[in-house]
Image (cartoon, rainbow, N blue to C red; front, top):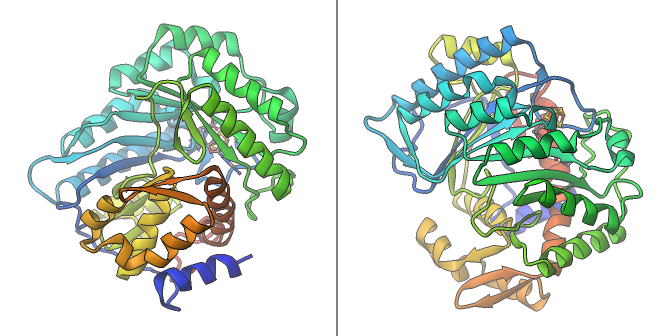
Length: 417
Ligand SMILES: C[S@@+](CC[C@H](N)C(=O)[O-])C[C@H]1O[C@@H](n2cnc3c(N)ncnc32)[C@H](O)[C@@H]1O
Ligand code: SF4
């Protein structure tokens, strides 16, 4: 399994040097000059734990959640106070876990961030379907949230039971979404579940838009080694037919594709915390990507609170990129949006894209993975499938390994990927 991402890494970084994450960190993060900087806040609590889910989370308790949020506010000021004045940032996303469980304190977190940052492109937050109520949505909107993402997974009872999720109360959800409006209402689905067909997915998407969503995210099921999910992944051929079929359906309906797995019915609707040049992450397991480094906070809530109480950052591991490593990181996440601009690459790295990756782009064009017009590359359906296919290897070899270690060790010495 690891052979594919390892060979790709060696080829694209022109080096056998692995991605090395070490137990060290900068107390002062060099973000002041970063352009296109996003913010992310992780809230690691859920009412019940789904057996397929790899994210950093524990069962919710009000007391633990309040203690955690007190530390989160401290971490925000620790980082924000590193530079005078307010730094302009793009977006702020709350992920989890289920951040809506802390709906009564989201305003405090946003206020803390706004003391140091000017957010220009809206504030997004993830909800479990049970939390889509008029009361919670009203509280979130009053706090400044402009986009919501609801984890539906599937409206079909067969797949809800495969995933161990209960039925969604769609009538209550529609009433709440009609009563409280947001710029983006996104719904998450999981595809490539055993026996899932094109018609199953198509009706999920239709139902999402009819309930009030203007954006959908259709994620391929990933079988993480450390989760206890009994679900087995779908074979490649079936998966490709499903992904191609559903993409064609969305394109026929006039939905805009914002990334490999997301479509919107209104052009302005979007929900993505990943496709940023740089981002600052706050909370357990949150990652921070800056010009030359990527760092990841500890997954352990007690260790996180303890570090922050000593006024030190809760960073567990840091990788300091070589230039080529940073380039492939940038290319990988930019390609996720299915578009790539040579100008943006040159603006970020100061060297032409063709000079660094001319051969690879030529091969990608020959294989009909991308088309090019004036330095703008657009992924084809075939390219999108292979990106998706490759992403599965990357996730299982790199993210699975890293999260597998981080969930059992608060501060591992070193991880090589
Ligand atoms: C943090 S959760 C969403 C919010 C909320 N906690 C919920 O479950 O409704 C983010 C999303 O990741 C996706 N996800 C979780 N585990 C996955 C897996 N093993 N494979 C693919 N997608 C997964 C789900 O679609 C989920 O809605
Ligand atoms: S899918 Fe959502 S509710 Fe389920 S464990 Fe993951 S974060 Fe929690």
